[in-house]
Length: 207
Image 1 (cartoon, rainbow, N blue to C red):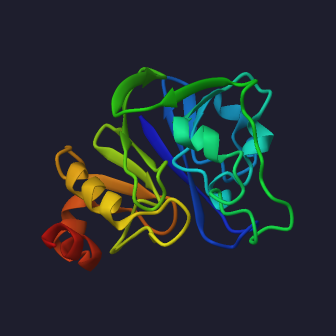
Image 2: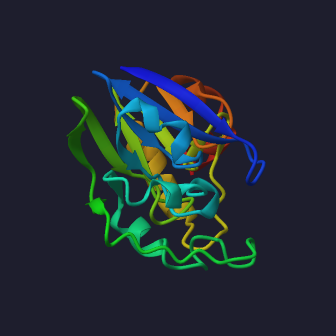
Image 3: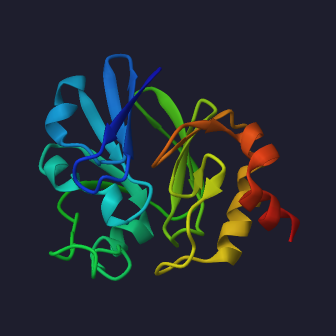
């Protein structure tokens, strides 16, 4: 398995990260924040979405009608049609109302394990930043979206965010065997480092 980190600065200038996972000459993309044309030559099979916020789906439309599988939580699927919860209302000139009903979907309602491109993937519901936040664990690598960052966590004051949920999610994530964390913004880190150095985690886990 190979992990290629792709960074998009152009649309929102927020250091958005996409991760291209390649195995046996097939690939999946976590976070559709780069145009489809940039990854179309990698035998792409699926797009995994961590949550509904507009900066994490900035190029999602370019992946539609390409015969791909779209993996996300059931709540994400619903929130893509809700401009208030996907935060496009008031932040973008045009609100996002996106219905993926005509695409091939794999909707997640609970923590579960599934297989893509001969890789075992654990989908872990990690609400807190948003109610639909979903992290993906692949071979001890956690792709965390805006749930967990290097020395930080996702903000909890936006629509559907919850400090109570965040605390539960942080406690849950410590029960998994995780080495590297690949967030939706910024640099990668390790779970061990965050448990020792992340003041937000320390505060919430010790409350």
